[in-house]
Length: 167
Image 1 (cartoon, rainbow, N blue to C red):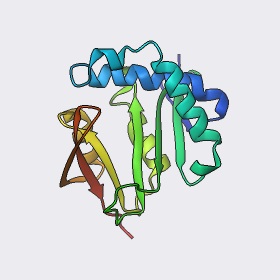
Image 2: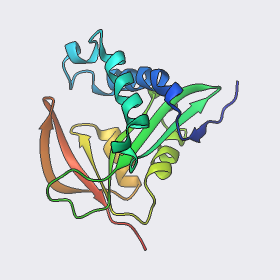
Image 3: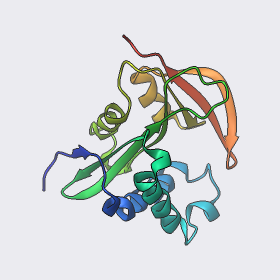
């Protein structure tokens, strides 16, 4: 078994595998923060597969940057960034998705995915669950800082973090 991983742009044929990893990552990350009925919903994988299929094929999302990490031909994580949607946005990109299976935390896969979708010289924002100390520490290590903005999305409290790109 290989100890490395590969990061690449996903194909639409990867949508189901990405959906499974997306849902499993939610279950690993948000158990206790989100209702079990959401995390274990029988249609969760199908909904995420529709999401990824749309994100990879719909012309409305051509400005998005998408990457997936795999090891031994199995998806272990994914990331997606695109134009910001926040009303007060004065930054160029927003990181919408970054998930890596818990078994692969600390391997560098998360950093490689972040780097694949967010150039270091680009002003970027993201929303992260609060509390989620592991993810918040990862983003701080990657140069993101909280900007004091909070919201609640699907009953999960979140904080916004931003990184100013270095020219």
